[in-house]
Image 1 (spheres, rainbow, N blue to C red):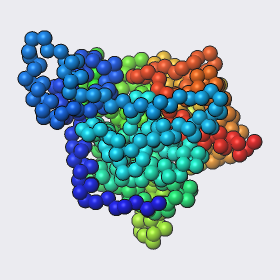
Image 2 (image 1 turned 90 degrees about the horizontal axis):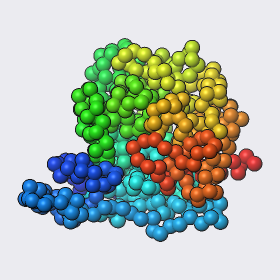
Image 3 (image 1 turned 60 degrees about the vertical axis):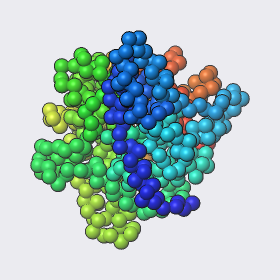
Image 4 (image 1 turned 90 degrees about the vertical axis):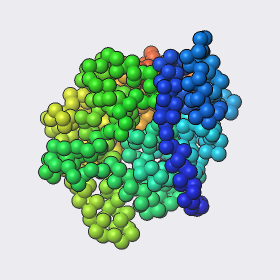
Length: 518
């Protein structure tokens, strides 16, 4: 399936559509709506669609806002409508097994830019894309790889290719893969899984991985921006030089303002924070880029989100995924005959592996931890991120054996792998919750090193948990409590979402694997 080339006018049009975010565009009106609690979820207005050109709306707001009896809610209803895409009347059918249910959900969760409302915060995509579901009605970066696993298992190869091609297009258009295809997500990315997406697309026989070499190199340049000018101990955006020879990466966001999808929530946190508001906002945004939004792993006080300091940490999962990107770039440059580039990226992968061992591996504790490079100390929190070095093959055999032992004894719960051991944070990426992507990376990582029994045990625990809730509620959800006696997971900034893209994807892929081993 070959694509028509993107024209210059199409590229310019797509970039211009994202020149401003809703807050940039509507300013005081945006803030007033968010803080007035007109919508239960701040994201609702960030995703709303203007009924008139923005300049006309702002002119009307300036004229009316100080009038006696001005009703902000009525003004918003007159000038915007909510972009709430329905699920086309879909209702799950109790007689369907889980495989059939998931296979039937793919078209329900599939979108196309031809149906994007004019003037919304959505960024255009050239191909069909799959959304997670619930409040998440856009394409997300790291969600998409785990969704693709299920698409592949369901035989939806056109969508597998489309999801990868959309990611490639966005990287070339904006210089990086945004958090998602909303204008307000452009200042940050998410865990860099594009090299994994490319690998899966090639494995499905859809495209040669070398087709995506320019985009892979562009993504690497984004994460390593500023590298050449760093002295030891310095950082720039996402790149950190820890010593003369060691470089690792952290999460960042180019803006230091409240997240537009959580404007009211971020503003309220700032009111009780002793640090400058701009510092807090960047830390919250960096936490969102990590995908773990939020977890006690980022907090000085696990009970207080205002103590977040994400940008101080280099982490096992981010640097493991960038190791995979470096290895992929070495392999693909070798495949196209560029031996110099292949050798350079091979050296970079080796350099990163040494840095991971030096700063993220703790031999006394026997696993990988976040490293706070600002305060020169390892985090005290064990998290499921320790499995990602196994997932990409950066761990030694001895390290993998010790990680497997830690996972088996401290992170495995009745329903699968818990995210962290932190029990009192009330954050959604902490105990007792489990998430599909962490299950997959643990299962595949353990299998990579021969710990098949433990991998299969985690897979079976997760599938039993998901199937049990499906039998009772006929739905799949975003996250799960991994212990008996609890129906739905709690914690986080918004209610539990159903749908749900990456749960569907990982569960469908694991069901296919289980069928193969029975």
